[in-house]
Picture 1 (cartoon, rainbow, N blue to C red):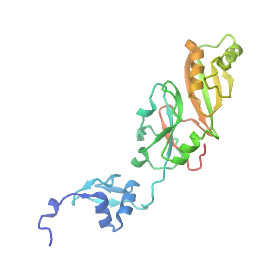
Picture 2: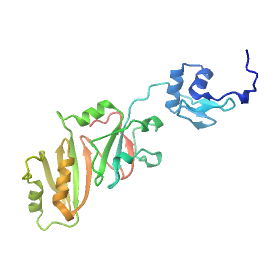
Picture 3: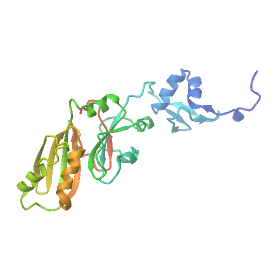
Picture 4: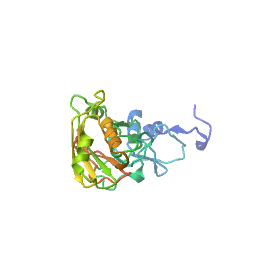
Length: 245
């Protein structure tokens, strides 16, 4: 029996159901089109398959659309000092104009991101967020730890840089504290470069504590083979397809 109600009185439909009937295609394909950012409602891209659309609204599929599974992504963020990692989410306005990944920003890319080897709140520098279990495992692999490069800044040029370097790199008297093997050198009169493999938070905390009032800044410059490479503070980019840690 036909519905006696006028068309504009019909109940709104789930977007994925409407698109599947309109094309036609399977509901799964319709959801992939929507999640991929290929579908617009009244000229506005809609990436929520569960969104409701009225019969009079225009649902359109972009040319060149592909119903493909959305691959997990990895994002690189230049964290400002003092900003908590857990409070951050990628915004289009903060995406670096120099991002060469060619990746379109999708809403699905902002979900289920895991921060790996997140630095302390006081630190700035490179933070990795990923949806990929494989990337997370590689960064957390204790059997084959990645190299990290850190920069520590001091407020004034030390009177004796060599003496300060010896003091900073001296193993702690408390042997219960882990003291990893690392390399430290002066990059400039007021900047110390530290390269360490594996988890570095305890080491960096101790070095900052030893500097005391002389400490003025801490930044992670590189994680494995991936560095900031010009990424401005506060901005983020996608890790490229061929980029490996």
